[in-house]
Image (cartoon, rainbow, N blue to C red):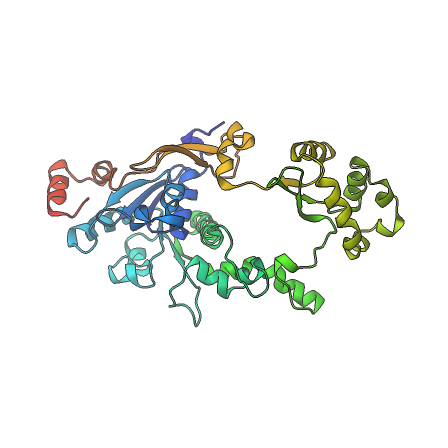
Length: 396
């Protein structure tokens, strides 16, 4: 069940967003889903992300629901004055442009702190302070230089993850920082500057592999050739070609349950395989038996048995198959949205529940500048003034 917007935890919080692509918008969509009023300030004609093709075609629809759109010419004095008034009445600003871009417009954190000392100013950048601070970064850049691509691909073939995982996770860290700053503001009355980044997010994600090397003293191998921590932790072919199934058996108790469920009593009863680490060393004995067994079974039957035993498993699924996923469709896991200029569809909701309810949709993906009149009227501007700005190209 969806939550009423007024009951959402960030109801009453106003966010002004100067962002594009994925990292910055991901901050805004999380805040908007949690109930904040998010005003996306776009350039005249709209955010260029709206017009990306190929792998970028889904960026804008996924990360810009629950926002209102205002197109401004920030190079004009009037457009800049409107932006300044908007921010002066806000609780949070989010931006992810190149370092110094908003500062040159007089919209940097120090300048805005003078007129709005309670403002939480979140900058989503490629790097935190250090020698790389002024480099231009992308999700893929930091995956490559931060060790994630090395860990994802086979040896000699670094491979980016199959999602904008660093952009999105970096945005999540930005939200964490914003929420912490808002909590601090309740005690001090002052906002502050929060900075999240792609590179340091990537380093955090691969920190477990750094720790592994520190513990073992051995260089970490990419995931496709790693020594697994468990004997059965792999993808298996089933009877029907193309239907693959991941299964993990990650404890001694699960091993016994697995062997009982699949009639592998000789393996389950062998004391040489009773402990996990002994099974890992015997993968060349155990895995061929399991592969042969699964290759003669339908995936649906295997899934039913694995679910009944309570073992970790996952059919290998394409993203487009999630539209019909029974679980996501049952309790608000997918939200009905309309892509600007395109079709109606369903996209994943925020993966959270509050008191058994899911944050839902309270504002569809906006057309560029669609909310200008309401936003500007809320700032105290009259219809004639707004109309004149439209004529002069100050407001889109």
